[in-house]
Image 1 (cartoon, rainbow, N blue to C red):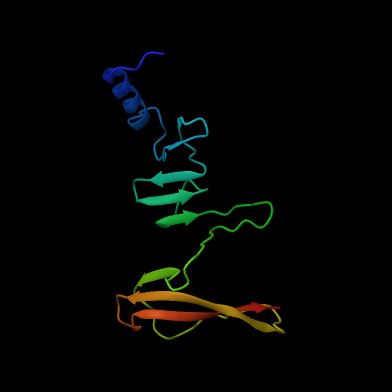
Image 2: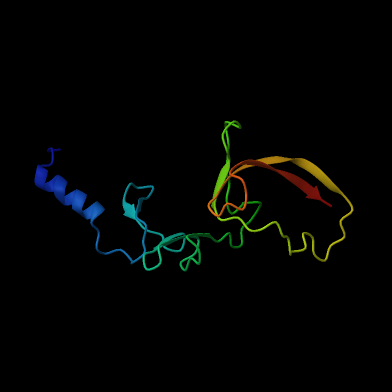
Amino acid sequence: MATPGIDQVNALVREAVLRDDGTSGSVLFLDSNKKVAQDNSNLFWSASNARLGIAITSPTGKLHVNQGSTTGAIPAAHFEQDDVSEEMLRFTGQAAADVLTQTLVAGASVTTATKAGFIRVNVQDEGNVMTDGDYYLEVFTIT
């Protein structure tokens, strides 16, 4: 097999990178055959409002994940942490005042709440309602 010339290589790169036969909003990736592919029903970019949809083609947030109907226990998101000395999630923005208006458990009879552990969250509050830093949130199982 002959080695392709520079013109052939450039043509292949243009075909892979500068596709013009894709659907608007497509996020291109390499499929299992190492061919450029798209799958808008599972990965979609809305350029008009700068939103990314995972399993949804009309995202309503900057990142919108639609878990949909799944078989088995497949979470909508999974975060894994190898080093517990680092923060797991960081929320940066403006905190709300210290007022809780929602019922935590609505329409249920809670007999047991067992502490399962803590989640470390790093807060950078741009509105200065909360002090910036690490907070440890208790996590409970409720039965």
